[in-house]
Length: 147
Image 1 (cartoon, rainbow, N blue to C red):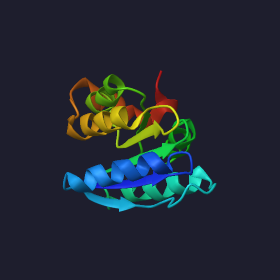
Image 2: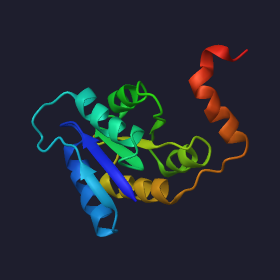
Image 3: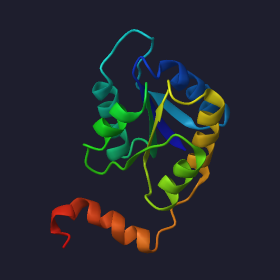
């Protein structure tokens, strides 16, 4: 699978662990940065990841900042992005099954690397259930039209 990664300084260390694991598992990984623990602005990296997911150059994206909150807020401003902020395995799984999340957001200062890796594995392996969920996702673009 083609996966694009991005992180700010608060998520740099976890992003590096995730990148190494994904490459070891044979995924095609693009790392948009950041490339150190020096302070940076997370919206810059969210944009890079979301552009690649939106234009199809990557199937999915993973964003990591200190809490995951900023990255998820920034990512969900981009058309076609369904970013899910997850802190445990159940929400990572359900973000795929019910919401067809195409970007996973995590907090490098909130969860440990072992849990993060299990979340990434679950998120990558879990399919979208389609069915009634497809109708709901289609409504995302027309939220103002929902009565």
